[in-house]
Amino acid sequence: MAMCLPTLEPRRLARRLSLTLALLAPVLAQATCQGMALHAHRGTPDAPENAQSAIVRAFDGPWDGAEIDIQQLADGHWVLHHDLQVGRTTTLSGRRVQDLSSAAWKEVLLKDRAGRVTREPAPFLSAVLDKLRDDDRDKVLNVELKQSNSRCDAAQQAVATLHRGLPDGNWFLTAIERRQLQCARQVDPAGYLGLIVLDPQALARQNPATRNSASRLQPPVLDDAWLRRLQQEIGKPVGVHVDINTLAANPRLLPLARDLGIPVFTYHLGADAEHARALREARRTTGLLPSGAIIDGQPAAFCDGVAAP
Image 1 (cartoon, helix red, strand yellow):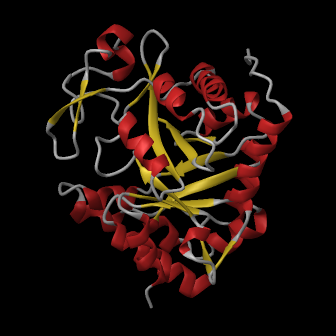
Image 2 (image 1 turned 45 degrees about the vertical axis):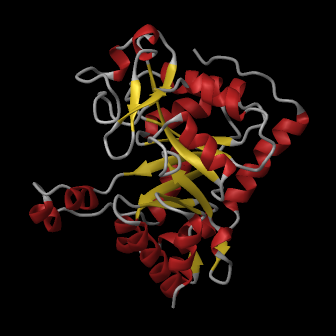
């Protein structure tokens, strides 16, 4: 059963709709790099990934927003964490996030991006939202729902939590599974939702064990029929978040998406310089840039890379 969401005041609803309209606006080649929304990948690079400090610094800094990953604990509370198991970025290891209690999570400390233990606690989503709630700048929280769930409960509870925590509406939800977005759409009919498209070839290239076999894998085909089906299955407004390898393999993606009113965000599992070079090539061949990019470093350096001849 769909849950009820908090009623948004007209001012707050208008702000949420303005976010959607901004994402839908096509970005032309002559636009500056600031024409794209640049989101800090799991927060700023000078703080632990998905840390509260990393998100706050991204909102304080030159980024247009921050990309975070959320999962639900066994008792229903939401936390920021990327991997399905803890250990790589935390002091606790060998457990699934969804099996932990809130009491256990409160004891977890974060590691920095070099793997050193810090004194910063692993964050609850509610605490991060409390910190950002009164921020009146036009910064956006880009929220990826990590957990797989065949039921609608998780996605709809995430939407409700975000509506309560950031009632001004400066957030949007993304997921790898279409089903999660369909569930979110049931309780968020007007909000922007983004489908994260995984590229098996790009993923294989990042792993030394599979790098040699990457060429045998095919990037996904995102043609006109695929995009129209996405709009039908999820409902507008919906966008696609693609690896730069997918973008290169689908040279008509940006023009097609523009014509259909579909925002495109890009990401890359490697260096920002490679990401910027791919966008430079896309602009050269199509005259277009994506709606936004999720980057690991500083926006100025990334913009310089996109603008380079």
